Amino acid sequence: MHADTGSGWEAVFVDPVGQVVQQRWADAALAVAFEELEPVSAFPVVPGRRWGPGQWWSATTGRHVACGSAAMRAQLMVLDRDPEVVGLAGRPVRLLWREGRGQVRSWVPQLFARYRDGAALLADCPSHPEAGGERAQRAAMVLEAACAQAGWSYLRLGPLEKTLAANLKWLAGYRHPRNAGRPHLAAAVREAFTQPRPLIEGAETVGDPIEVLPAVFHALWHGHLAASLDVPLNERVLVSPGADGANGRGGTGGPGSEDGR
Image (tube, rainbow, N blue to C red; front, side, top):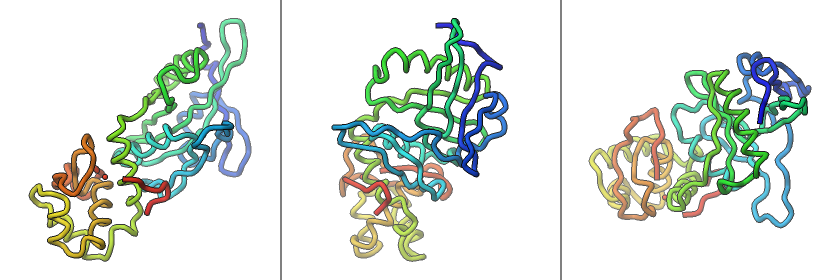
């Protein structure tokens, strides 16, 4: 495939007042806050599929992000816990380009993430490596080049390992600030795990586990505490201080809702 580059790329997006805008990609990538925009087109509804489009409440931004699949939701969980991510959006931009014979092609990446340093990630979240077929693979080549020009990245993010995905889903249910508990509780929870110890043991030193465990899971989601996400979460999993201290996010986990518990 031959694709035009540089000035040949165009971005299409919906601006903050609801107008559809088409602009040179180089200009849009530099000036547009895509993390604040609504989807340029809706996520498709596929008949017979168990999981349809929805909304993910982001602990990073305090806003909802349009979400089109379970695979995308899993990647949103990962990015929402990344302390370097400051903004998230679903399908905020369509990229247009011309192929060698002049045909206009387009692609709408599923996910946009803005990083603290101003760089960004455009990503698709295929359910398996071959998802989207040849068209998706060809689009990926164009998107990689366009993002490289802007100092960004484009990735096709593969499915998470099952245990990691289950643990993240559980912790995500406690991401909302209401799960931090009463003002003194967060500090007491961190104090209980100054040295690594089993989750239930530390929780019981603070108080009634029914009250304390949500605060522990909230701290694990935000990285104030840490535990291995490579094994199923259970009451004996070792919990320790978060590697990134009070300002980061770090992790651990059964089933949680998309909007937080």
